Length: 230
Image (cartoon, rainbow, N blue to C red):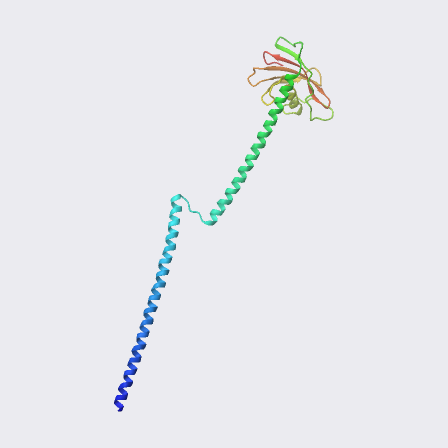
């Protein structure tokens, strides 16, 4: 073989090898470009999808008039829990007040019942303003006072409270609705008389009471009056 043919074959082999290398590089570049496009597509369209979802949620919240994140939602839940506890406490307080009122009403009704059951006996009237006068075997009302007793006539005093309770028991009036028209001394340090009436003055009574040590005020006579008076 001549040197010319040998050199020609060598050039052909080098060209063929270079062509194959160029083709392989081109394929790799194409594959790399495709992969890059896929990654870019995922990143672009995937990110836009999350943003679109977020935009949609914010738009829905905006349409309803407010936007709540997770922290705010937890806070509102906690606030609702506190509000529920406060409401429950208010209900319990109201129930306690209602029970106390019912107990007071029951006691008043019991006093009225006891007064009605006692046998009443006619008594002498003090003056011409008396429709009817009577006595009965009333018991002392009871007292929270201790020691030597001195009658206190000031409004709000323990004596005034207990005198009103005793008058309600003797007359059968409701102690919570009864009005005290007058109260004062009955010519003795431990004796009083008081005038009480219903709120509309349809019933007016003068009640005479005596203090019993350790037991409280005891009604001794009741007079039903035509007009309010001492």
